[in-house]
Image 1 (cartoon, rainbow, N blue to C red):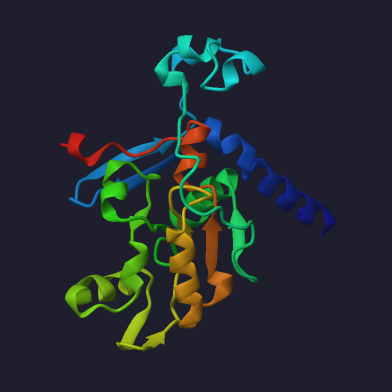
Image 2 (cartoon, rainbow, N blue to C red):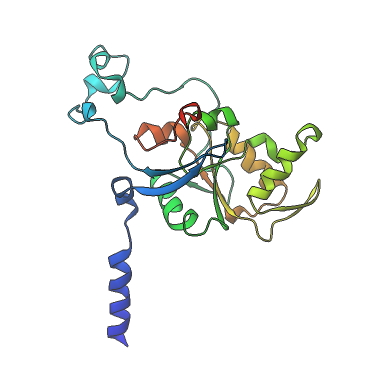
Length: 234
């Protein structure tokens, strides 16, 4: 019996992938753009050859330094840093905050394996989604969770994506709700927090909500793959 248990443990260990390996191994997904076009994308840490020999040091790390102005633009990551409201690490008690490796692990081991139970949600407005998002994410703008008679179709579609049945404008069936991971532009972005707080308010199970606080800024900041600008998708 002990030998069988040991063999089972070794077998699981052999095929288990340490999350830290995922950015190098790559995670292959099928992404659907908002125009219906599908593309197979391998999410990985993308490094232009021009960047491989650039050291991380005090002289070239800050974009405003003279030395960094000589660095190829492909090797720079610049983001908005003075807008928005910086969000706390823990958004709501019972809602788990995650980082890049947990997002990759969620995509590979949960979303790809069982898309009927898991979903990665881009809470930004669709123009942001179309410009570039995390491959395999679905677009559900944060404001579509609140009923608006002018956007009734979008409201019902938003909950349908989460496997939530809306029995009335203010009555929801969460019995088959997906485990959803939300993100937006960055730690200063309030769109995914607004979506999460509204869902909790109406009764969405907290244990089925995950929050990627770093969002697109952190994702791109470590050179992980983003989708193409939809204008370039043929």
